[in-house]
Image 1: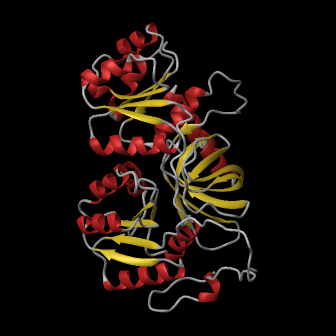
Image 2 (image 1 turned 45 degrees about the vertical axis):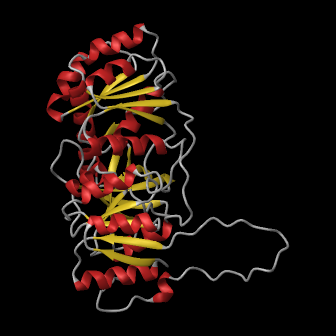
Image 3 (image 1 turned 180 degrees about the vertical axis):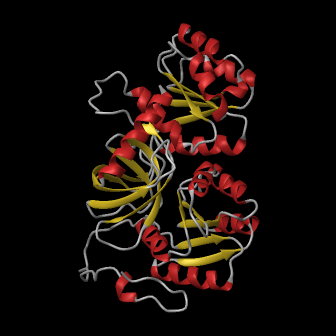
Length: 398
């Protein structure tokens, strides 16, 4: 496999798209959606990094604009909606900038990618927490080129609110905006509550299909849930809190129907996963094991190749996992390396890609962009380590 050296030009033939046949004139009038070609890179980049970004943009058929600070980038994005935004994850103010992007209707659908020298669990978790769609290292430009090429250049429209209304009770601005972005892209109409008075008033209403409530806004969430049920509310309830309070909050909900708890600092997409799981409890579950939320960096590559890409696990089961990435592999068989739940030892597994989801708003989507994989092979030691880690994790959550 060819590797990239910033000091050397890329092989243009390697990245060039297949030659298209010449189109013949037609009498039909065709309306072509506006194409977005601007990639905005926000950060204090070295000369070497700027050169690398320029080559990446060229090979992705995009025009690069570099902005040293978030204020300049926000003004540039307001002038012309970008195709995508690359944000230095170490830049002061990057979280507020991305939050502002997600809060603006004309920019809410623009893909945000975090750039970091090295990718670890914290890099991914932080990027997702402020509304990012992926994290990539500039040391691996091929990975960034492949992602940018897969992202659509046409404007993406927010899906209709076919899932109904969602109430987000959250005082923290960035978290509130990130949650709203995820839920709107999944087909919810979102209403906010930012204080206790609004929380108690709205949560009792029968107008909502989903309630996401940070318990810092309501000291007695179980009592409020029961009041809502007495009023006829059939909403799914997800209570968020700090990790250290999850067990206590879970105990408070024992016996409650269509309600669960969530780590308030986890990626906002976790709320969507839990809402989908709560909503499907009325059907028959044919799964061999439950899918559990679990986030860790995973190295993946098509079987037989020699260079890894990086993603982040979204959920796991005893026989498979879902990997978050804007670059799901086209190949059917992949090699994975990651740390199982409740373990400090990485394992190497072979898996079959069962399905993929590309980037974009989708009211029927149950997961963020990425791919689902079924574990098919590995050493007996690694497979057993995976299964035991999953079982220990499941016991801890039960």
